[in-house]
Image (cartoon, rainbow, N blue to C red; front, top):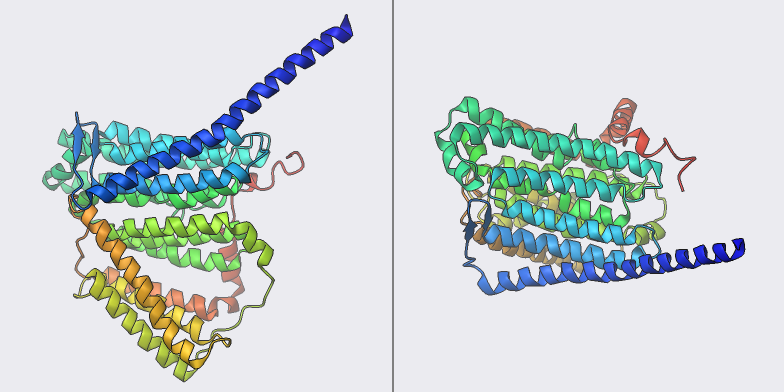
Amino acid sequence: MIPQTNAHLSSIQNGMDKTIDAKKSIAVPLVTIINWSLFLGNAIFLVFNYPNIPEWNWAGIFRINGFTILIWTTVTIFSSIVCSYASNYLTGFKYHARFMWLCLGFTLAVMLLVMANHVFLLIFSWWIMGVFMSQLIGIDKAWGEAREASKFTLRYFITGTFFLAIGLLILAFFSGQFTVSGLSTAVSGLPLYILIPSALSIIAAAVVQSAMYPFHRWLLSAMTAPTPASALMHAGFVNGAGILLTLFAGLLFASNTFSILFVIGGFTAIIAQFTKLLQVNVKQKLGCSTIAQMGFMIMQCGLGFFNAAVVHLILHGFYKAYLFLSSGEEIAQTKPERPKPLRIRPLQGVVVLLFGGLGAYLFASWTGKGLLLNSGLLLTIIVAITVGQATYNIVKEQSLSIMQKIVVPPLLFMVGIGIYALIYNGVTVLMAGMAKVSEPLPLTSTQIIFGAIFLIGFFIMKLGVYKKFPWVYVKLMNLSQPNKKSVLMYKSKSI
């Protein structure tokens, strides 16, 4: 009787395993199809209705406009690419189907966020977005470090939700408006002792979400996530700060809290660029790079260019998703090399200055930023430095001829700036119905002083001056360490 019983139990177990495998085999392509269908639907609607996207409002709960469709199209293509990649990359992974469903849940949470008009729905969508992401970070329940990383990051996400709830509820109860659209018009009539705490709370929520210093450790501790989850996190989740600040641009204008954003973003961008140079792990390098890019996005919000911040989050999303999904190939092809010191010959310096100036002029002309003496001038200077740096990388390349070094730089930056200007102007049209999303600010002493500090920090980094001060190295290395429980605590027990 015992052998028969064991055989019967084994048969039942095999049947259950086959049922589970069948569910997994259905879930993976199903989620991928749903994501691509959402993207194609949004993209087709956007193309056929551009630039006159209709606006819908439903009972003060949902609102759909050009900005909504833009973000929907962006997040669904990121999710579709990640799910298609994960379909093969995670084959054989125990939690493959769960990963796919969590990706879809995260995508729907972002879509809910940008269509939410009621403050309680906005708070809920911000919270559930963090829950989905923390689950993706700790997807492997058998891995102790992954569980700790999930719990650690979730605490940050809950903290961000708490700040957002405080900021929105203060505004809602004092104004009597419980919709985002209602608050946008009501903020102009509220006193500063209401506006400033509300704005600071919403800024805090954005700062936590985008991993600004000192809230950066959650992103550096999230490397236990599978590579596709990291791609989705860096391409979509951290960019939520730009969406949130854009929705409440009117509040930031009314409270005059732009300098706070500018300083936080600039400080984070500088420090993250320094810490990136010290990393030896590819994913940690990409993590520091994302923090720096989010700092630059927050800086753009602090200069009054919310439309530029949205363009930045879209372009950064594509770029960072590609880097994460190709990180394995990057590791295979990378060889340890001693970094070469920055040395510019007089003729190279002239070429760099010339092309940097031309790039800045084209940027200012094609986007309309930097043509006047306002906050757009700082962005134009940063573009000039970026073009100059790219030009230097080309002119120092020994494999290129003199003619190639003369032709390639202007061709590259004209194409690059032209594509950026096209996207920038298109996004600006889609956001035309939103209040104060593209209003350059008058230059202030804070912007000028901290802009100078930002530029000095950039050149110190490029020239490698920091290497002469060991205490700086130690400080930066300590700043860029993840939570210890996410890398060490369960190593001997992990699978």
